[in-house]
Image 1 (cartoon, rainbow, N blue to C red):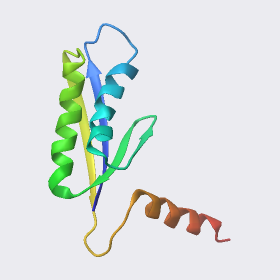
Image 2 (image 1 turned 120 degrees about the horizontal axis):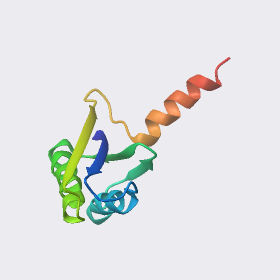
Image 3 (image 1 turned 30 degrees about the vertical axis):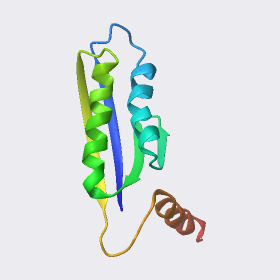
Image 4 (image 1 turned 180 degrees about the horizontal axis):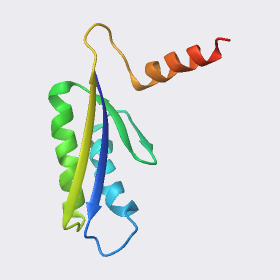
Length: 101
């Protein structure tokens, strides 16, 4: 399973507020039924590598459909093949290390 961070930045929206455009992009993940988390700077989600590129593209396109004239999308993919990881397992791993004294 791949872990993906996507940051969709609509430009040319006529307003400094981007929340509605971002919500339109995140709805793509809701409809796909994938596990995701929203952060202040992007959205993290999990999926099979063959699917994540398509989902990221759909998120990008959603901002255009919502009225943006330009969209800048950044995608970061963590594709670990030696063992299965999830968003929760990666966070738990760091928290375990932080708990050590």
